[in-house]
Length: 189
Image (cartoon, rainbow, N blue to C red; front, side, top):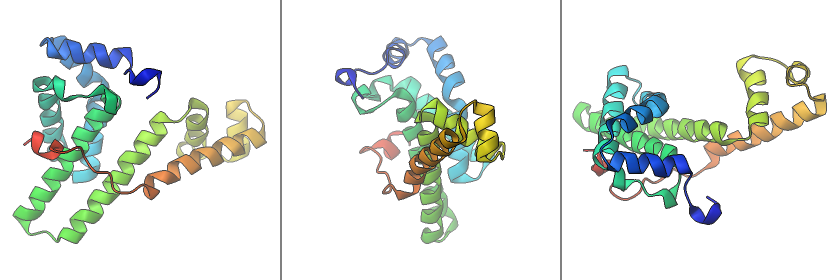
């Protein structure tokens, strides 16, 4: 994390506010991360109601257990994303047990959702110039010449940014299946 593993000031302050039972802190946290939690849950479950439930459960857990966040293991955003992913996977596996859905299909869905979550994290963590280049090329469907013009850089620089961004993004599928911290899935049940 850098700086002697001291978490960002906002994360530390938010955890303190939650620990003191400050309802406004929960509202601020929800405003900042609800779309992340809901989107991740929806990718795993493919179900709006299920994603809504996971979102409620995650923020309820954060409210009731702010001390469970350990800043030495990463940012508050990463912790909340891990909670969301773990809870969504837990719900998906529970649905498999209840519906008799084939385990192999569920595991494929979990792996795909994990890769999507890693890709989301990689994109949000990459430097802004790389993110902007990927945005131009993939969301706006511009070629590298148009991307260079929009970004105000040379064509070589646009190609370099796209190549680096894609190299970073490709690691989302190469990473081994992430393992949640012990007890994380059970913590939300």
